[in-house]
Image 1 (cartoon, rainbow, N blue to C red):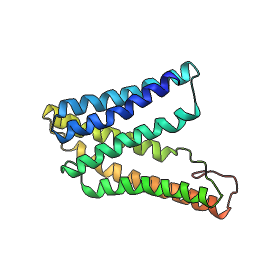
Image 2: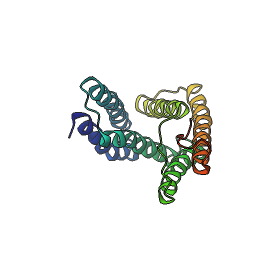
Image 3: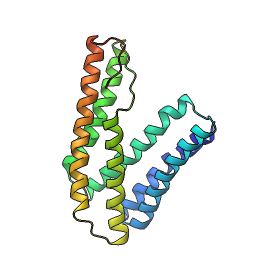
Image 4: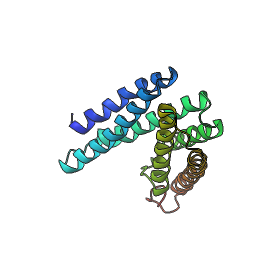
Length: 185
């Protein structure tokens, strides 16, 4: 197992710790765990590129670790009233849509190779910043009122745009339009 994959697995282990800290209102610990997960995401990517430690397993685990952490944090934030439920439902629905599309295309013997789109990367970046801002506000008793609503709106717009882009690409792939093309291309 490569070092980047071990770091990624550590990020999976951090998820329940961050969620538990949030549920017990230990905001400093939750913020620290989220920060460590974020930094380790950058570190494992750097090590994989610098030392040529790319692996197929890592290509699947790395984005999955990001998504598991973000979805878990967003669901808890929605549950405790720190994020609007419409945003949490939109985020989870987008991810479910993508997973169902990939599974359906595989079952129909027309597998689709999913590659991240720019709008999806921007969406993930905004979601990470939003989660960090909310956790930081709670951990350090800050009130970043103009920032949080703007990030919530931007995250909602990017989530819908990302879902639409993946859906259009998937429909093109499944219909044979642009045969061999990947969603989003």
